[in-house]
Image 1 (cartoon, rainbow, N blue to C red):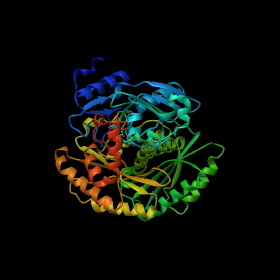
Image 2: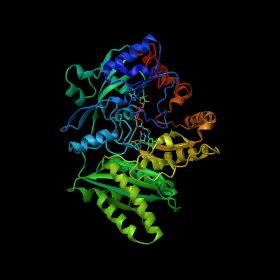
Image 3: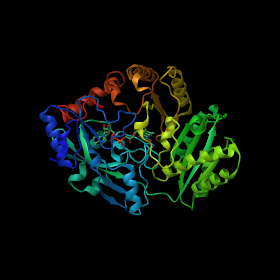
Image 4: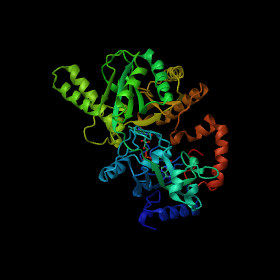
Length: 468
Ligand SMILES: Cc1cc2nc3c(=O)[nH]c(=O)nc-3n(C[C@H](O)[C@H](O)[C@H](O)COP(=O)(O)OP(=O)(O)OC[C@H]3O[C@@H](n4cnc5c(N)ncnc54)[C@H](O)[C@@H]3O)c2cc1C
């Protein structure tokens, strides 16, 4: 065993046998391990397990990119590989593929985020969906690999159903395995990227959402990330448009014009003079011109375009700090990374799911506004994210004084109970919410989960009580 046992509450394995040794040690001592790949699960529990005395198994030193197949875009990585690592690797090797990025920037790990079922901006934006193959260690120390791995690894990555029950699907948001390696599908970059910008009035939101859903259902255009930000995130100047839609459109030069025409057709009834479809060179040019105009309005618009260029970076598979703007803490990134330690407030994400339907989205938003009555725990920034053709998520950061955390959790539980009573639930939970999730929100389902977890991890060694 390498020298990592100096601090028993924090073990940093360098390889698979270190992980096996750590699990053996945990079994012998009836201890529990909490696993992280990057350790930046901000707003969902950071590096804490549900059990406060769990040993932190920190896989961030296992950083190898083991293989990349440029023909298929399948990359084989160790847990510690971050978005930044993959970005550098792709750049250095002249590989024209998107990094599966998120708003968390360079430091977020590819695997940790996929295991939490996080979602991002560039394709494939549903990160759990892009997991093709996993290897890991079970609580008894035995190795696990995806079904067809015993026959042919390439075939296993190609046909992910394998044969028999598909256990890989049970790896995300679970606690029966330490994942040591995964193959992830990367997408090759499209030749053209355009972004539709459309400011929307409050009463246009439902119609716009239905139009977006119809566009996706019609399957005629390659649409990428779709987000609708509340106005506050886009500009400090109040306008009559409460929402701001951004939709990424990928294409080939041969079909680009036609694609943009199709998209424009869907949104022709929205008459905002600020409706634009921009590409990156056009945005840079516009920003330069606006910076030269000695008018306050022009300067402000140029600043918005600066953020917008960061959106292009993300849409084109790079990394960016622009996501930290959603926290509404006045962070103005230049070239520096935001230091989460400098944040003197506690951050918790609240991300309820919604059926992709305009009226249902309005109903959720109304409920969220009705729940937004606490004097300290407030929802200020709202982002609708399109998860797929059927599902939306409303993503909200909550920031508060860490000294008031004790008061926070009962309030947070109560809003989840109210939300459940109205038919809504988030897609992902903070570690502190695990007992409430199991007991109050999904008690029937988690009875089955518990039986499964007991079979795979009978002594409850791995990530006790996290989604189990
Ligand atoms: C400004 C901001 C923007 C953000 N934007 C996004 C966003 O766009 N999308 C998004 O999804 N999140 C976002 N986040 C939330 C969070 O920071 C990211 O999801 C981040 O990627 C998670 O941290 P990580 O990748 O280091 O995961 P980790 O902390 O390494 O892992 C997360 C969890 O996965 C499990 N896990 C990790 N590795 C293993 C393993 N090897 N074996 C078994 N289980 C494992 C553990 O339960 C762990 O707690 C954002 C946060 C901030 C502050």
